[in-house]
Image (tube, rainbow, N blue to C red; front, side):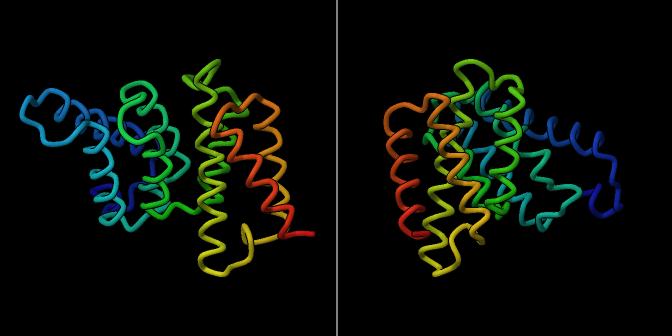
Length: 188
């Protein structure tokens, strides 16, 4: 909050501070035998609180910085802990735009950024399919244009096809195939 109040815009300083705050939040709960929440839950609550305090500032609450940081944290410290989609649900809850979340995850996936290499790539693929489904549901629920435009819908369809060809398995594969069919039906 100090960075925001002082209009401090150094990305490196802000990133280091966020990493410190994330680590401190995790460690405080992980090392407390009387903690009433899991570390990932403490991180969720911290992020929600900071989203309100910082009013989703582009400088100090940047999706481009926070999405990779939280995804990495989840894989390195909270893998298979909590609900499967707590990370994308958090991004949706703090009101990062679907398009921004998806573009950031796509970039991480395409660039094979550690720790999202080999078998961990499927985590990003799963999160992208989940986000596409959530965005679709939000558009239908709000009676909005699907994915905000035909171009976005076509890009989502192409992304899903890419993820299917990368070897999505099980429920995620089925969800991606079903979503592609839904998109195709709406654009016939």
